[in-house]
Length: 73
Image (cartoon, rainbow, N blue to C red):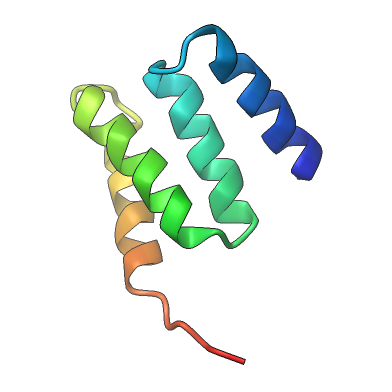
């Protein structure tokens, strides 16, 4: 998964504001349990592409992540 994150970061160097690449990076961060950063990226995608058919699914994922219990060790 870390390799996927590095690839995503490399792609974003070409177009730093591409909402689709930012969405993909957010999904990777979510898989890595980096919820705060994932929420930022996924929210950016929904704001930039509200009419995209995948936006509804991303909104549901944002809702799920926001309601996760945080356990401090």
